[in-house]
Image: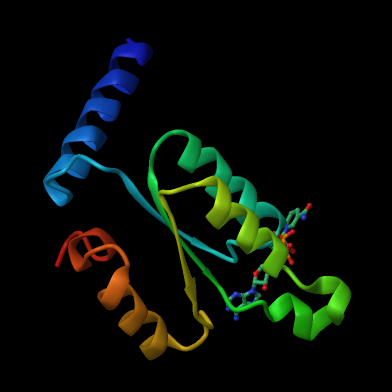
Length: 115
Ligand SMILES: NC(=O)c1ccc[n+]([C@@H]2O[C@H](COP(=O)([O-])OP(=O)(O)OC[C@H]3O[C@@H](n4cnc5c(N)ncnc54)[C@H](O)[C@@H]3O)[C@@H](O)[C@H]2O)c1
């Protein structure tokens, strides 16, 4: 019974995703995409052919100095994955984040599926 429920949920998620994207491309937003965890998430989903939007502003460099610079990781992701889109945004700035998403990120229906 559990496996059927899981498959139904899977199917439902596929349908919702298709509804929100007529081309059937699954989209994902990753904050801190140049960092350790974020870049692994980007890598995993890009390998699954998702379109991944990464938000980062290299704040790590501010915290830790030149050794904390994560631009090399951003460049690596951009080089390796055609479906990766980088947005230089401070996620604390809600307005800037919103403008960036509207301009080049996932559509509103994806970010706020119930609106
Ligand atoms: N690394 C681990 O093993 C681990 C384990 C459990 C939890 N965590 C937690 O998960 C979170 C992420 O960990 P991590 O290892 O990927 O950290 P990280 O420092 O490698 O990555 C964080 C990324 O977020 C970016 N960033 C920071 N502030 C930002 C802002 N205001 N706007 C946009 N981007 C910003 C940084 O530039 C950096 O690239 C942290 O809160 C950490 O405490 C980490």
